[in-house]
Image (tube, rainbow, N blue to C red; front, side, top):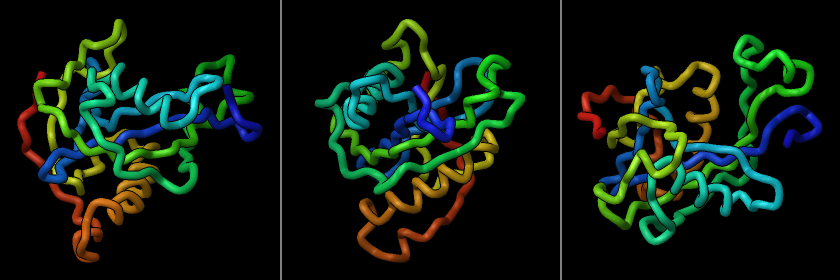
Length: 175
């Protein structure tokens, strides 16, 4: 399902723990890390898609999280031509996403990366909110930065905490 401009409707999820650290998933058999995300199916609202994707990719159920907020508008990224299937190249341009900010109210042990038949991640970790974007595939970085900046206003009380401090992380991963 594409819009008239060739963008696929999608949701992105920034999941934070009680220390305002973000959930970061490692793409299966790859070296890139990302937030949970996925397409909106026909007839789904963005919130319904977000809850479905959250469970499929992390095993977390609605009772394990609390919705803090979401982005006001769609954030878009274009996928480089070489990443697009040949048969889609004339119509598909990329993804447009509504991003949700969620608070984990469950436990770390509620996370199960094998909750679906086709897992997205093979490891996960908690990182600083201002996680380094160098580990994100290049064409998604702008959307990640925009989402984190917009959602920070919902999470941090003090304006100085809302300013990006892109840090490095040596956090251990969970498998």
